[in-house]
Length: 231
Image 1 (cartoon, rainbow, N blue to C red):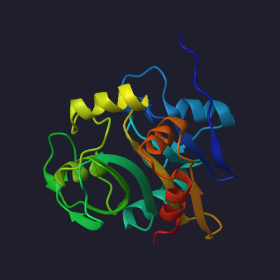
Image 2 (image 1 turned 180 degrees about the vertical axis):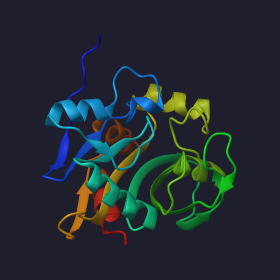
Image 3 (image 1 turned 30 degrees about the horizontal axis):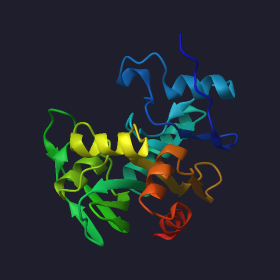
């Protein structure tokens, strides 16, 4: 058995635990047959049952939130269903995305399901020739929503083997040592389900993704600040 990755805890209190999910791990074993999943890793780390409040793609990294009780999980799900949770992502894409745009484009709810409304706001933060770093703020939560919406703009994510281009993915592997989906869940903003206080949880950009951005000339820390200030 391979060594289990360490869990980076971003927040822990009596109701919640938030972690910085590495790229390449699933959230829950029910979504795939992987031997290792974040739910089990977090449960073992905190020594308590945990309940995922949302999901992240296997290939994405970043903020992942768990409840420590079913009641808190229900309260969090109500916020997600109401669309009051603000999610901010950083991504590297191929192409020339607009400076700002709201992508209102229906996509399938599941792989073979009917199309349903889906909305993502994007802002281009940095351009480097054929590539760009963008901020994405999904306003709905559909399967692969950011990936599909950026592909809809003809600006697929680097490292996306389903919706992207193999030649560009290979270039980033060979030149920038990036062997993952270039998508990072930078922050979540929501209301604490017990105290009612505003809560912002942020995860630093991991070294492999930051290294690729720096190689493109992008000022990673400054881009994180811009993203955090987005309304």
